[in-house]
Length: 391
Image (cartoon, rainbow, N blue to C red; front, side):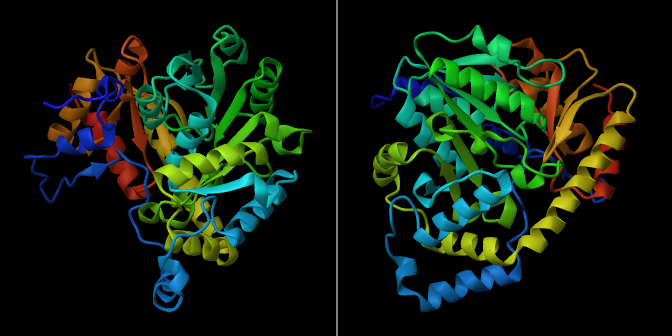
């Protein structure tokens, strides 16, 4: 076999792809169809108007098939700057915005400008597994920050993890996988911690459109020189069902954008033109529709909380946006439990072991439930199957 980068082999296989393999050879009878709560990506296409805008651009706009600016199309960068300025009560300039091939690429770009092999990133656990995979592949050391029982990270505990090699703290809110919404004062405390130590605070807000709170979820963008500390990430995939078009965004200092441009030019040159056109059309035309989507997700969250909280043997730890983090009652690891649930009760969920280090025993006791693609009838059926399951 030809040589393989040991940093690539050291990290784990993509968890969602691994879970899909559990479906092979399993039959799901008509009276007990598969309930798939393993992934949060929208399963329906964008609204008709957005699809038509993309189709018309493909037919009528020659530039839609060419390279664009590496940091993103000017109109979309302006729209993102205006949206975040208004939503957070701060001042974001278009020059502080980059458009990326999905939010995962935004994270990769941010890390690549911050850390090299041997440097350290503080990452709360349970973590979003693609974040951990990228750090592994770059030879960057992950310093796990174990969340408290309420699924919130503790700034004081984070402070004890800071070393001379520390480069950034990562927060995901609303959180993937736990769904926890981080209070504004907690986000502020992490900002102040990062600022004191000269670290970056990477704030992944992929699910901000489905936050249950009204008003700004934090005040960081109103603070003087916020861009010297904050790197804020966003995804259009969940808001406008554009997962296949790969459009994300990053907000950071203009000085950092010069470094981000180097990374993006090397790995993708420019983000999909059709995806950017669709994202911009969505921002301009789908505000009311997106509010309805948010209401539906919040209703599914409420249904999930009610249904799972009613199970005497299972424990709901947190829920929000697309996810619930639940503790199972069995004396086996979730890594063994999850495949059995597929075969025995027709439920595909991800085990907690996919979201924590191998040395963290909490992963064995938990499962992530992604409820965004399951209606309220399906959520009730999910709870019934869990209640009747005997492991």
